[in-house]
Image (cartoon, rainbow, N blue to C red; front, side, top):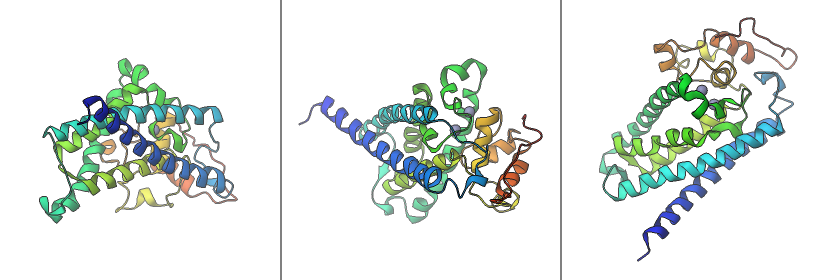
Length: 269
Ligand SMILES: [Zn+2]
Ligand SMILES: [Zn+2]
C-alpha cells in the first residue's frame, strides 16, 4: 500500500500536469493563431491598438504556472474530500438522470460566474487589492497568457471554485471536463486583446448578456467596472457595467481593415 505522501505527490503531479498542458495548449494555441499567424489580418480588431511587451508576456506565463501549482493544491482538496465522502464526482450518467447531467453544466457555470463576481469585487477593496489582485492588473492590456496570471493568494481564491462546485453540485466526470474547457476557453478569449465578436453583438436582445473580449479588456484598462467573467448579469444588477461598454464594443467591432483608429472620447468609468 502506498504511503500518504506518495498518494499526495501522485495526485498533485497528475493535477499539475493536466492543468499545465491545458493552459499551454489553450493560451499558447490562441496566442500562436491570433497574436502571431493572424496578427496582421486582425490589426484593426486590436482593442487598444497595441500589443503588450515580451516582458509582460513572460510575467503572465510565470504567474500562471505558479497559479497552476496552487490550483493543484485545491485539487488535492477535491481528491481527498471526495475520497472521504464530501461532495460527489460520479461516472454513471444515470446516477442523477440525464436531465440533471445536462443542467448541471450551465448550473456550474452560473455558480462560477456568481462566485467570480463577488470574490472579484471583494479583491478590489482598497485594503485587499494590492496584496491579492494587483498582480493580475499589472497587465493593463493583457494577452492570452494572462488567463491565470494571479498572485498565489488570488490563485487560491480562484481555485476554491473546484471544491465548492463538487460540494454543491454533484458533478459527472464529463461535466467537470466541460467546465474546465469552457472556463479556460473563455478566460483565454477574455484576455485576447483582439475583439472577435461581430458588430451588434451587445445590442442583440438574445446575446447581449454574454460577455465579449472588450468587456474584460475594459476591466483591465479602467479597473473599476466590468467584474463578471462569462455573463454580465451581475454587472447590470449591481450597476458595475462600464457606461460606455456598448459604445466601445461597437467602435472596435465596427472597424474595417482600412478604418481602424480610435480613441474613445470618454474613457473614465
Ligand atoms: Zn483578467
Ligand atoms: Zn480586477
